[in-house]
Image (cartoon, rainbow, N blue to C red; front, side, top):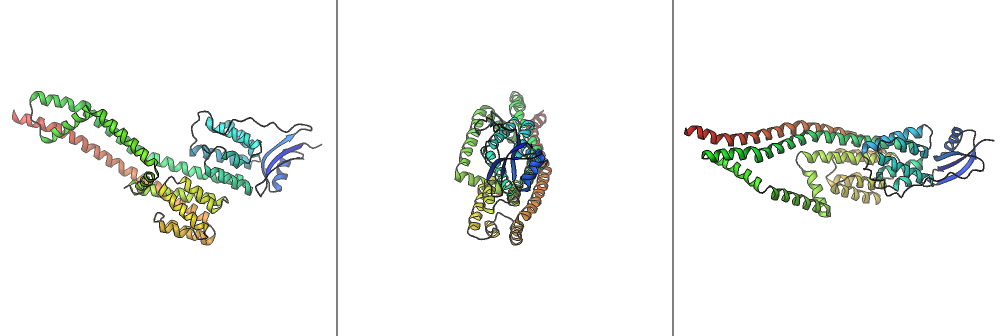
Length: 411
């Protein structure tokens, strides 16, 4: 007699079903369920008279033990591997169990074990991911839900992998572009500290012992250095208090709004930050729409991931306009935050029914534009900072040598 297979599937309506049936092999059972347009969540052989498989014990979904939060690179690897596993014919449960053993990060492995346990208890895959809101991004939960409902979970995971890959690439470009200027700035601070605490006191003692009359530029420098040395703890404490106060102010609604406004209007960095937000908006919204998530839900989720209150409020108002039956392009245009290119691409996408494709093309354009702008900023900012350091050192050297020239002239 053919083996009995116990299955757990999700139909096109999104309902989860369980049951058993006979099949000659596991592959035949899998093909039979997929032929009925069912998304296979769990499928395993059950011996005659055997009890249903024991449910794996899991801890509450409050998170794993002391693990760090996963990054875009970790989710990119997970989604790509999970998509390959689903395409190979394995079930979602089998794939999660396999990945829970081979992911690099221990925290990720533990969360996947908990998701697998929840899936085996009868929850859907989206519900299982959703029980860990502090770990799994909301975009992943929503797109998995759409993938389960449409029976295209493998395709959805591949698109999620591309989404996280683009996010990871953007983070790496920003990190690379800011690393060199940050190192130069740190070096400048170290040089300034060394001058104030070690070099200038030595010359101040020499000039004082020799009775040399110092010019005003030297006196100003020595007075500044002496003040810093005497009250450095007050200066440092004042900086800490100021930073803490600004941090608390930014946590308020008004403070966060003004802070995000400032980030958009900053010279040099503001335009790049604005373009990065545009690329995140178009990439996220386009990815969600391409997987069958509704426009309103997609905009709500995109609003949450923007990390800028000013632009998020524009997206929120746009969502309200769409709920009233109006198109998306006009409110984006009225906000003044979305460039004409984005507005026109959204308009064309709405007219032709290809909004997801238009948004993806727009995201590619702005991602490339941000990468170019970051490279240009890095190549420009580095020399500027070096020139500033050179002038700072030159100022100190001139201030020190002027009294020496005065001394030689009086001999």
